[in-house]
Length: 134
Image (cartoon, rainbow, N blue to C red; front, top):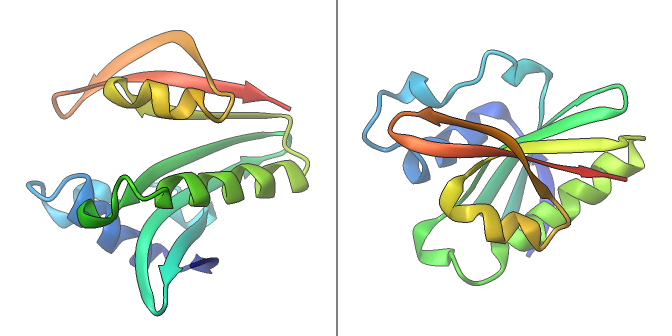
């Protein structure tokens, strides 16, 4: 398995399939997707996990981490997230954050991210902003 930069369209496909299949396709697009760096974890030629990184100076946010349902629990998301956190650090990022689904907080804590007091709802899901400083 290896990580490669992918197109936003490849990221959109996985986001829609995994995160919000019940919504219209455009629901999973982000207004700033053109500015993001989109990464995919490949098993051969198949994309099995995606995430998008948005860097602004020393601050960054990763968004929309998604792994195929039948590949979850194999460490795919962990491998991809480790790569992206290292890439952010390599790019000079000092602070990185994400909007984590509340039921996934413990996953992100494994990577040194900590919960903030910011909690919000979107599409019937509760999210908490998590962050890490380098």
